[in-house]
Image (cartoon, rainbow, N blue to C red):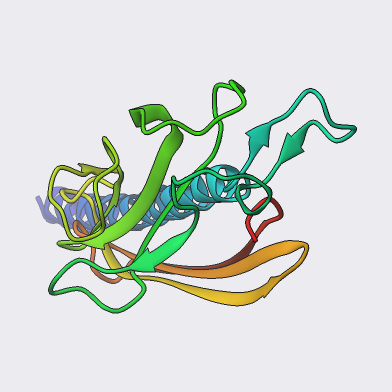
Length: 194
């Protein structure tokens, strides 16, 4: 009988240890998955913003030696890069710009040639239909149910005859696990924008 009680006690200790280890492993895996997801979101934001902003001011021009001109070299009324902010957000937390996406030789006010990104309600939103930084009607680029944007700031590092350079700071925090945070700072050169 004593041997049976010892065996049961040892089995109970072993089961408790295995259960504790499994729970701790699950928590660690979950934290790692959240951290990976947040890092992926930050990289995707950096890629998307860099890809579009680097083309700011581009206008297709097949008659020139170089296949593009810039807004500064033409008489276009569509504005190029502008920094602003939405009411209640920090200064320079919105950037709007345009480029000749369809290579038609002109920037039109169509939805697919007017771009922008802004911070609003702890999300990064993208511009729709030529809206200004202060107007509503932008769409979420980040998912506010999983990611909270704690910083989105743009600064113009340099503006010269070759174009402009913008420094962008993005900080994200997991809504599910607030201990998971990431911050990225990157520079985008808009060679067409003068």
